[in-house]
Length: 352
Image (cartoon, rainbow, N blue to C red; front, top):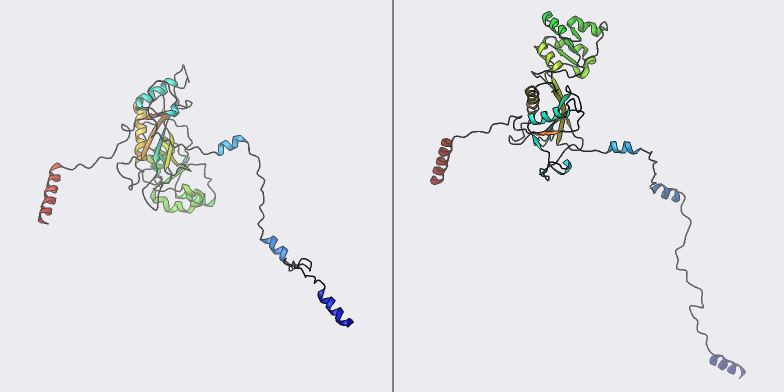
């Protein structure tokens, strides 16, 4: 009886509901086990370290020298000035005839101003170096010495050594002031060390002695005579005269603007006549124009601009190129031949 009552009391007692919050919490985070040996070193090796290099201090004067300033001038968007006084950078350069430009230079070098009546007269020639070819797009720089009739004292050291077998020509070359004139025996002496080569700028020789001269090509290096440099030929007297008194110019190419080339050279002295200076300039322009590539169209100008100047004046005058450069003549076609061709074309069209 008592046991039955105890059972009823236990059933009638309130039942405690089991809640999740009161129970132990579930572990949902990932387990951090110890990494394998070498993992940290492998990850560090993958990281790219950026090393900060210390840059040395450079003065502002050197920074300005490193800045590239192109010599190429584009005046297509500019106009000619209307007034007598203007800012040159905002307008096109005025075009002068050669006589007018030379008269202006003589005015600035008058004894009442610069007082340099015997100063050098220089010219700057700008060219287009494009070739219109796929393989060779631009012309390589070159250096020429042009023979002129009106010679002058250029003040340059152009020492020459010559090799030939003819004694008469050797005597003439010695009278012209050649540093060394030798023959086959001289070449053998140089090869054995018995003859010392003087300082020289150019080497010329006759083709008959070229084979013997090749024995000392290691001493001559790039100055070995060649037809390309006009230092190999029969007329050694004429070659010597050209090298000694000719006008030397070097056509350079801009490092940034590959399609632009320029050359600064001297055409004479201010005490020479206007005609002499103009003829010297025309002769150099003729030589420059001969380097025009055949792939360039005939109507395209190879020489783009010519400037005349004379130090120490900073003024440069643009010259009219029409009277200085001979342009290629256009092909002349007769009217009668044109009429015959038109009749033939019309007859073929009617037959078709």
